[in-house]
Length: 190
Image (cartoon, rainbow, N blue to C red; front, side, top):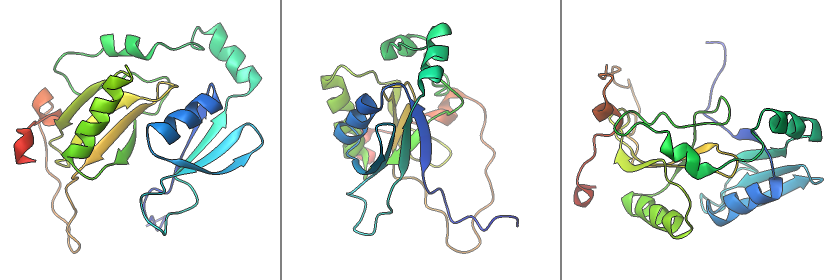
């Protein structure tokens, strides 16, 4: 063992408009700013998780002027998040469109009702939903995928399979089929 890994602590992303991104994560994702550094860095946490929540789960940093200029030269400064949705394969795996190497950032919600409320709230705002609600085979968790203002895919997840405390279980080999990515069950059974 090289690292005594105790779990994922936080994720850090660069964004085009820090104020717009803070608004999204506070208004839609129910997070709050725990600290800021000048106008270019913000730390966010989820206050509802527990009284013992860590200082931050996300670090959001504003792209520099030079980085924004490079995005503009590549035609990536302005994003149409609805346009990404049109590129998704109909029944394939949730290969979500991204604006960089991050495939998605997952946030846990309590249950299917939390996923459904989020989907309804996003639809009311006219915000695109890429996939879901659905249920993954590996992990057996319920999911919903949608973008943040910079196109980073967000996954809401609920009811992830819990790992046994002692001994674990052998890894399962899943087929590479659309049904592996979404083995949806009737919502009443959730």
